[in-house]
Amino acid sequence: MQLLEDRIRRDGIVREGGVLKVDSFLNHQMDIPLFEQLAAEFARLYDGCGINKVLTIEASGIGIACITAQKLGCPLVFAKKSKTKNIAGEVWTSQVESFTHGGIYDIIVSKDFLGPEDRVLLVDDFLANGAALTGLIQLVRDAGATLIGAGIVIEKAFQPGGEALRSQGVRVESLARIRAMSVENGVEFC
Image (cartoon, rainbow, N blue to C red; front, side, top):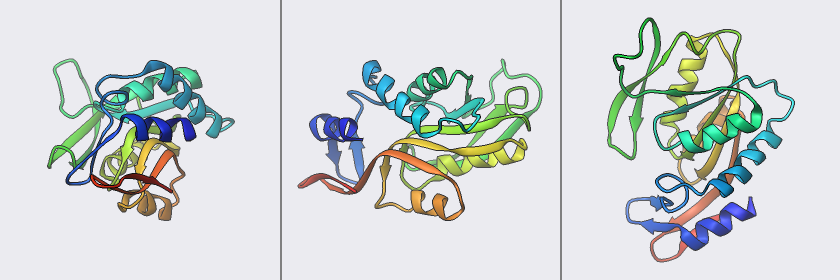
């Protein structure tokens, strides 16, 4: 998506260690008019798939997932990273290893909000190694729901996550795919 690639070139900052900072418009400060356009593209890509639930993981994917769910006319559910007092009853649980935070944690979704009748689109801001999506996919499968696919804002195509998921038959639609990036040369898109 040219609009997104241009924005990444203009406002993204590449840091050492494979980090792309896009917090000025994507995952800290959110550019809602941009989100509207990104979400409209996800809705176009998955038009006619019967999606009745959008699922993401806490926290930085929630913004784009909310607007995508609004465009699709369905609820958004987000997997929490810890069980809180306001989650009563049974939950679906999976483990996720975080590249950003450098640890393994459980993610949970109440069984009240994910079940066999659901046709699920996963939405997230980044795809790198695929750990977050793999954890979400496990929740969907455990719930007996149907996984329709994943909508990713930025995919680091030089890391193994996207290819691994696609090789398992998961439909992954990424709006910007990065072939390579470095502090010296910036970002190259596929």
